[in-house]
Image (cartoon, rainbow, N blue to C red):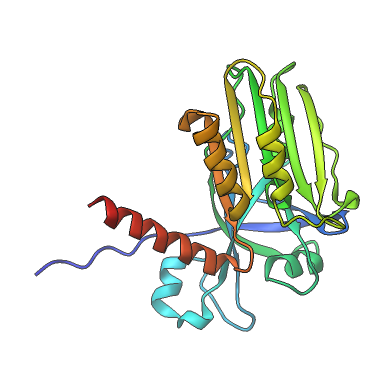
Length: 276
């Protein structure tokens, strides 16, 4: 008889709100005290945040494996993935920016109502990208969901490093100041008042961009539709090596994270089956 597979240990860490700030009309910055957070050196490092269900009692520390063993699915915390905007090790402060569109979603409304002392459980970080000093220039492309990672990357550019940064937001009120030691050419694109679909301006800008000479390190993250289109252009038309491009569809228009993750898992399974 085959022994059952051991339960995966998913013990979370606690993050406690220290302060919040609305940095644009639709972006809320939450600064946490996060004991146990370990910076992995990437600028796209992310954490899985657990939003517990009201009225449900969970054993502490929160262990998602144990929760799934002892609670029905409707009582499981809602998990959302967020990029870390900054981690100040000396102050033990973990900063996460939340896009907020009223009552829509789970994380945005939570951030809008957050007060000092409020808690979240999390695990992570993950992440794989950081700007390399060896690159001749850098290309950073994304929407609001990628702004925390783009901002962190700009801040970590080596002195004098060249970077072209293309960001799409709703309008000029959603623009943020990105500061670093590099030579950054930053262009904002606004959806408000535009007849274009989401991401079209970013795709067109990348396609029209005159690439400088030398090795480029590219970062393209955000809504999956435009990420896929730019991915195809960079690999097929520009011939960039795959190891020089960081790509991630953080979300897909019309789906929440649960639906998008299920779609990605289904696609991955089909691709794996096709290779066999």
